Image 1 (cartoon, rainbow, N blue to C red):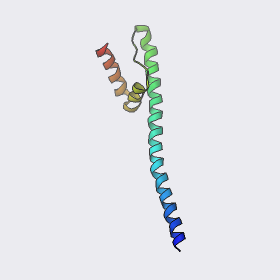
Image 2: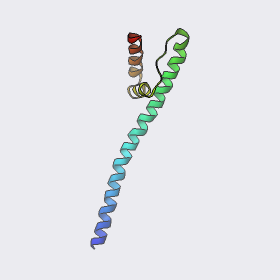
Image 3: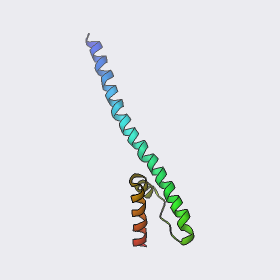
Image 4: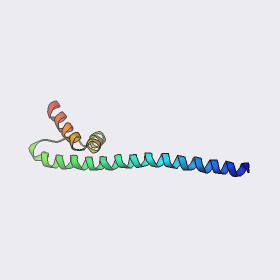
Length: 85
């Protein structure tokens, strides 16, 4: 009887661990996907602004800012670039 109880507690613990890990993995996947979209948005912005001598650095930080914050993040990066030169 105690062995069955131990197995039940172990299985329950594994299920809880999987639930917690799945949520974190889902959030990480969402941030990664949004960062890729943000990087693409910066790439398009640099392609359009390139002929006019304007570009925003395409790096992981700017891609994450644009991906997580969306259009306001992109606008903030453009404003920071214009202010700092």
